[in-house]
Length: 106
Image 1 (cartoon, rainbow, N blue to C red):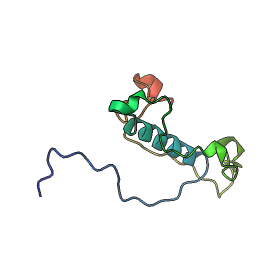
Image 2 (image 1 turned 180 degrees about the vertical axis):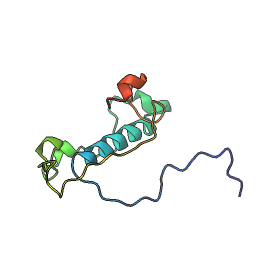
Image 3 (image 1 turned 45 degrees about the vertical axis):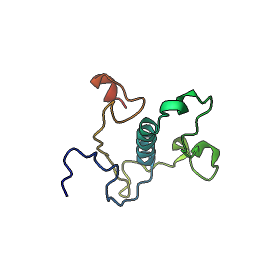
Image 4 (image 1 turned 90 degrees about the vertical axis):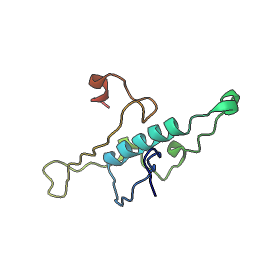
């Protein structure tokens, strides 16, 4: 049917595996988008504690922290340089800088 004027679905059919520090970038972006979309509305704003349903990975000892990930030197043929492009702005995520100069550092 006609879908004009309907909201865009919040998912895409994309399959991949990302590890290394780039995975933390993707995780941070997901959390920022989740917090923006899941912010309390109406009467829920009055609650003193708010469960946003995100896992607190710092509480899971089996998950390496970004500072604990072993790095491979640039001269190693097994090393890859990754860049992940995201189309986001301050309307998409919580905590995204409003100034373009500040956003480029994120």
